[in-house]
Length: 207
Length: 207
DNA sequence: CCGCAGACGATAGTTCGCTATCACCTTGGA
DNA sequence: TCCAAGGTGATAGCGAACTATCGTCTGCGG
Image 1 (tube, rainbow over the protein chains, first blue to last red):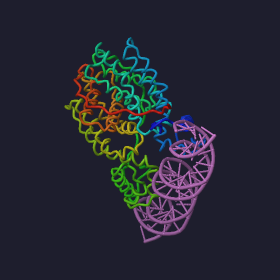
Image 2 (cartoon, rainbow over the protein chains, first blue to last red):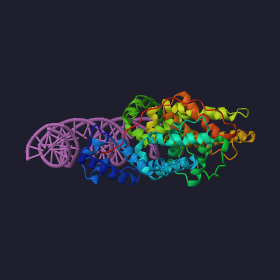
Image 3 (cartoon, rainbow over the protein chains, first blue to last red):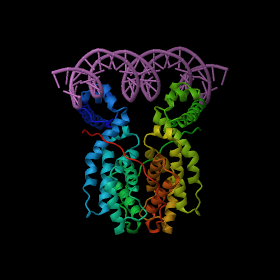
Image 4 (tube, each protein chain N blue to C red):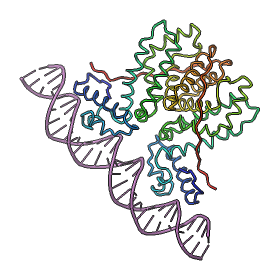
């Protein structure tokens, strides 16, 4: 991993970067069954180097996820201004998180617990989230008994579940809307309508 | 697995049962790293027999989960009478599901996507869930734009997230309460108060 | 009660995640 | 400029998930 006990030597930094790039490509290809050996080869490093920086597959996957998060989600949180209404911002974040989960199937299957990983990443942005929650509460658009620390959990929970559900956009909107209504029961809005259904399965029986 | 194309021979049925029992014990022991080899040994069957019935670890884990679900959750759903208020029933189900997830760590880590697995199991009980939702909607305690088919997704999502969160009972109550408020914004109740926080983590940087 | 479909255990083999070792090369501070 | 701290690739090895094969045994329908 890249917890800098001190500064990284530039060769190590370069290895890590190339491994992450290769891992992102390989995880995105196929169903996520790509071997670590292949990632090392595509990165142009030895397998030992890969393991030196990322002790196991899950750690590597989470590091890739962190990168994607930093690119796609952080900027949204960073650019919140005082004028923004909280509801669209939260909805945007949740929607993009579920986009990522839906798009990066292979990656997600190597991450392990997606909800947990997402929660941790969102918690680093507490400074960005806290003020918008507070403003919304003063404006009465988020119930007062919600704590800013709840938001990462709630967003991660919904986004992870929706991402893996491979739900269409309408269904996702539906559940996101429900979440936001939960945050603000006083101003609940009608839910988008539902889609069809799927079949059921079998259990072990004898007769 | 045990999709009966026809009837199971009793020796096969016995093997499956013993494998499931052993798997449950082994998954419950330690962190869930127990080998399939050990499960086969404890079940008193050959490893080939295990693989014959359960093509991989995840399938086996889900079969064990299905059993636990059948024992602990199905009865609750089956015993719903017309007099029961929906809120406590849904809360009870969600709470017990998250109990299971919290208790069966090792099992859960082999299941893969817990939300998905739980949703599928709950969907088999649609017949039990539909009427209580309808009654509640007539009574005005569940918003009319919720569909009974939403309930499995919502319960599974919350229960899976809470189970893995290793949250204390208060925190879990808090989020469950929030879910129920989402179902019925008109009668939202105050949330239980929050607990402390945890630290943050490091990202890969160079300097 | 007989025959056979089909379930069984043993065993061998492949792949992949992960650990360990080691001689060699690069970086960056002194 | 030098040199040691530490990063690097190659390689060997282990354990576990899974696949495949095969000769044997047994439940059960006829």
